[in-house]
Length: 489
Image (cartoon, rainbow, N blue to C red; front, side, top):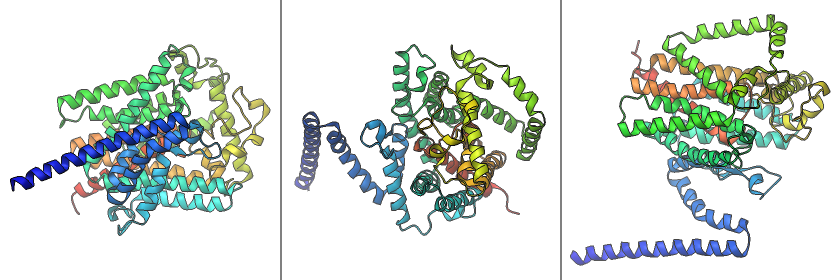
């Protein structure tokens, strides 16, 4: 027995030593080839072991792949940024992983693609209807290949974040792990950004590009920061947590707030204000129906007095220059602020495109390639372009209007209302206090992006699509728990 035990120990030691020497030798060879040949060779060689490990996980444990995605989504870099491929801007390593997950999950032995408890959930039906409409409008698209790619990428975003999330988040510990892993990657990006930004004295103009290569501009960076701020605020208030964890949550919250302020992303700032107001309304226990009617009345008042309101806004000439206070004041400047005026230009183009193709639109993903002829000379700004290389429709709602017709806008608007209604329902019906508090953090995170969607559209990118749909998956799990905790009639 003693000899057998010694043999096992020696065998494990030999295996570990051999494996360690092999790993060191592998990366030494990779480094040598990098010095001799090119960066491309080194990228492939360095990522090969990770790739093989992830391939193994595909067939054994989706959860590990999901957590890898959480960690690397903030750190992912596009092929264009790497200088490897100009014709296809694929985000590496996340989008190939998502595509692989889509295939692996589809051919897996689960009896259904989603847990049966969610088969009749309103959010799931919203997603199905939206995907079907996107597919239909892709068939009539002015750029079929572009639209098809948009449909497929939307499918793998939703599968990786929401569909797998519904399976994974049924175990509460993975909700926390999702937050931890995603934030770990995000903190690395924040550190890099702040160090780079500090070299330019935190200049507001530099904020737009210091986030490169991880984010294409500061607005996407600000949007994801805003999403996680309510989550960590609520985590810090949970009663059943250790002092050390609470300190860590507060520290991360402070870092996120600092990063958001220094991002100079005005839509991100505004979204936090709206999320705070939403939290206050929930505290007052005001129903979603009452809020919906109030918002509808406010919209009607705006249209009744839009001339007077626009004239009042036109008197604001404060540009987004010269520091934090000017950036705040410039939010309502629609007369001279180039960023605001360019948004209005893009929105007007979307509406004109819709007028030309009101029902089926121009096709998913085509706006940036088709909007240029719809610009008017009196609405052009110093940042306007005719080459589709400087953003999109700047709206999650007007973008679908131009690309998928009025049904596309209607589906998107109804879907967001379903998510908001779900958030209110969870908060009022979930019995467990800590779960209610954590679900509030995710709901307010969704609110920040729904608000952000009025000014930008990032759900066609992994950077925002993955966290947003993962947040929605968490809410769906809590929604099911809330329905189960209610007394049976």
